[in-house]
Structures are given as structure tokens and as C-alpha cells.
Length: 433
Image (cartoon, rainbow, N blue to C red; front, side, top):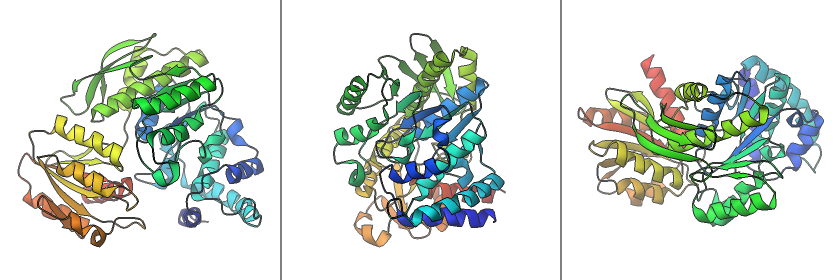
């Protein structure tokens, strides 16, 4: 089997969509010896910020000398990165081997009506646990796919859990209110297992607090049990902040990711690392934390892909993420003209995201589509084309037109769906070659 054939088979499970529930993943894992029970895990949920928090945490734990697995989604450059160890994606050879192993098992399951139709995400979740167990990682950081309670990753018994943010997203599956969505995210909290929370609105935090109390889980909350203080942007690109909990008081920590929200994600990762080190009786020092923070990088999150002209990629793929992006635009680029190229999935609240962008006075918005089954259809949102908003039928040509119009200090910001931003990122990498 070639890697292309392996990926074709894995992606072929997309036809079963997203099916919340644990019966299929539990059946699959039982057939391969329940590897999820043989590895130490940290579980991360949240509307936004999961990927960045996982990256910061992995960087610190790797700096501690640990072998760290990560399971994340979606991928930005290549599929293999979803299942990684120490930041390096699973090899093509290993991915092919696991695919061949799981093909036979899935065929058996498809013949059983009770567990028929395992999804792509369920499949690669099982593969990740299997791979991490075989490679004997010291700890695996597992990012929730959707929600928490009924997500296929929720078969693990983690040593720590984290919930980054709560916002209105995937309402057709998770619920119509912040409280309902918070209850789904809080579903990853396990009895007696400590939970760390990020910058979460009070009504959602109240649900998490109730769940933690019910589960007898220690709770470590943003700006309560640990504190993050934003200082200022780093002149060389990035942010500077301070962090404090009962064990550490660190000043002027530098990260290479742009945005105040990234300092919050970094702070949450530091709290998780602090708790994990204490559990494992590891010596976590200020120097280890600082080195980890410097090395942490997560593509397509306020990523500078070009200096002159300044081109930034940011996967603000829902309303909550877009509101944080708008904050960043105002704080980081308030005196510069921004050309924004935006696209999203039609399942998202496009009107709301477009409204947020058009309300920023120094933004000129260009809306486009891209090659993806659920990408927005420009003909269906034609009512959004008005003064200050242009439609771009082919984004590759649109980028060229925008760059020609830009003046010396202007900024090109490409944002929206991570699937869209990853395609644009690949385009720029190829162009640079």
C-alpha cells in the first residue's frame, strides 16, 4: 500500500460524517487491546485555543526531557502531523502499517450493525492511541475533536484535563446556549482529576465549576488559581507577559505567537505543566519554561508568512475566534490599512464574522471561496457584497490583485476556515520555493 492509498482509505470514512457517541470507538479499541489505558494522557477541550495550548504544553514537557505525543486537528501542512511525537508527525511508513492493520478490523466492524460505520475521526483517534502506546511516549496530549462528553477522545482516563474557552460553535450538535455547550465541554472532567480552565465567560465557568465539584476535581482557574498579565507586544514579533501561581512568579516571558489571547493559552499551558511536573515529581524550572515558550510554534495562528509586504495567516474559523482576531487587529495594526481575504465553511455564522470585520475602520474585506466540500458559496451570500466588501471568485488571482493594490505599510491578512488558510499557506510555501 502507498501512503496515497492509505490516506484515500482513511478519508473514505468521511462519508459517515460526525457521529457523537463512544460505542464504535470503544469497540475498535477493545479489538486492538485498549492502548488508551496503557499511556498517560492530558485531555484538552474548548471552543478555541486548543491547538495553541497543546503546542505550548508540548514544548514545555519536551524541554523537560519527556517523550510527548500529541493528537490534534485539523492539520495545516500534512495529514501526518495530526499524530505526532515531539512535534514530528507519524511517518508515512508507520501510517501505512497502521492503516493496513485497521482495514481488516474495520471491515469486521462494518459487518456488525451495532458498530457499523466508524468515522474518520474515530479511526485516527484509535490509531493515535495505538501509535503512542507502541512508541512508549511518556505522556500524550489529546485534543478533543468536537465538544467533549460524546467525543471519541473521551475514552481516556487522563491525569489532567484542560478547557480553554467556551463560545457558540457547532450549535447544531452541542446546544444553543453557552451553558449547554459548556456542559458538553465539561464532559471530559473525570472523578478526582484536576482541571485547568482558560479565559471562560462566567456563565460557562459556573457550569464547569459545578461539574468539577460533583466530580471532586480540583479546579485551577484563569486569573484565580493562576494569573496571566499581558505586558506588551515583542518588538521582534510575538508577545510578552507575566505568569504567577503558588509555585512560580515569572516576568517578561516571550512567545512568538501574536495576540493577547495567545498569552492566555500559554499561561494555561504553563499551569498544566506545573501541575503535571508536581504529579510526576519532575523539576520544572523558570529556564525550562522560558525555553519551551520560545520554541513553541503553531502555524496559521497569526503567522507572519512574509515581512515585506507583511502577510499574516490566522485561522479565525468561528465567531469567538473572529472576535479575538478583531481585538488583535485593533491593538497590533490600528494605524495600518488591512486588506483581509476571508473564506469559511457554510456551516458557520458567516454574517456575524463578516459584520465583525467590516466594523473595523481600517479593514477592506475580500470574500472568496475555496476547494472544500462545505466551503461557502458566493452566490448564496451575494447580499453581503457592498461598499468596503468585494467578492473574489478565485482566491489565487485575488491575492495577486490585492498585493498590486497594497501600499508600502499595508497588511494582507488571510483568515477564516483553517482548511482555507492551510491551502493558502501551502500556496505561499510553493511560491517561495
